Length: 253
Ligand code: A2H
Image (cartoon, rainbow, N blue to C red; front, top):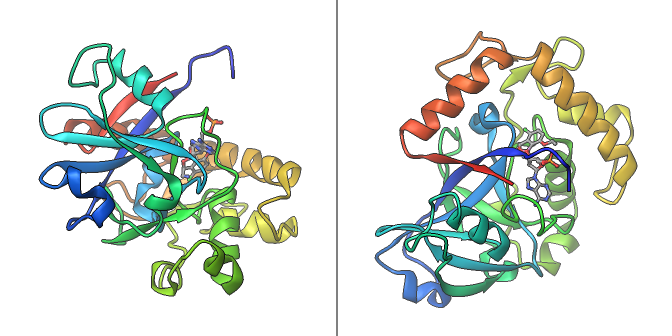
């Protein structure tokens, strides 16, 4: 936990109906996986969502229509940031394990992939953000390596009941150019550093620092309505656009 408050954008990834039987009680509501990100300008390149298989999640009523699936801790924080049907009180209408989220089809704002799936990531922290992460393998080393492992290791897919069609059709989408790292900075840095597994924590931290800093200071967007603009300039514009259209909300912790 840092001393500084962290300002996230919560991306509303809509669960596409019809819902599986376990989610029957949510039928008729708009249900979202709420993913916390620091990089709203990368949302064009989403390929999937990440959930912790053994994580405990809940479906919380945010207002009359919307239900968010996220950690209890983040639901409590949200309730104090005006996002709960009852002020300052999270209302959980269904307890859900990460296993039950794997394979849910999602529609996510700005994503060039129209339908993406919730997939397992074992290194998700439940005490950060919402416990749900949206995956942008072009620009996030964690996302790149986890998708790479899922794609190349059938046994890993099998272990979590991941179907081939939730993973194999999804290619890395170039969305940001960084002069030093090209159009798929996370892949480039992971390959250069010979990172082959999600367990190489120290190397991944270093890879994240490299791409995160360079992406912000030297990146240029390649896609979307702000193509050609510097990441630094486009980031607040894209964040505001997502918030104005109701596709995202602000969240701090
Ligand atoms: B970022 P910080 Cl393209 N567990 O979003 C693990 N990781 C989590 C998480 C959790 N509970 N909640 C959020 N995150 C990820 C995009 C992205 C991110 C890109 C590049 C870098 C990057 C797409 N994934 O983060 O510890 C989310 O991934 C690099 C730091 O609060 C979120 O932003 O600084 C970031 O980590 C928040 O990490």
